[in-house]
Amino acid sequence: MGYQKPIPLKNQDNHPFWDAADRHELMIQKCESCHRYLHPPGPACAKCGSTELSWVNFGSDIKGTVYSYVISYRPFLPGFQDNLPLVIAIVQLEKAPDIKIIGNILHCSPEDVKIGMNVKMTWQDINEERALPQWIQV
Image (cartoon, helix red, strand yellow):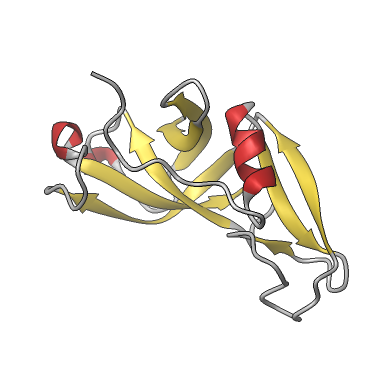
C-alpha cells in the first residue's frame, strides 16, 4: 500500500521550497527589501510587505534546535494511525535563527525529546514526486 497521509501541494508561492525539498535541499525565501528570511513562503514579506523576494539555497546539511514540540497520541488526519505517538517539533535553524520549521522528529521516543535538543534535517521520500523535510536527533 502506498503513502496514505496528506501530501503538501505546490503553489505559486511555495513551489521553490518543495522543488528543493524533492532534491533533498532547503530553500528559504528572503525579502530583498528588509533582508529577512521568510517561512512559510508567501507572495509578500510578512515583515515589511515588499514583493521583492528571492530564494536562498541552504543546501542539504541543515541543523537546528528544538524550539517547541508536541506529542500526538491520536491521529488527527488519515494515515497517521500507524505512526503514534508522533513527535511534532518546531525547529529553529542554526544558519537562520529567525526561521523555525515544523516537522516530525523521526526515530525518537517522546520521553527523549527536549527543548534545545540538537536535530538535523532529513528528507522522507513519500512518493516518486515528493520528499518531506523531517528531523532526526544528533
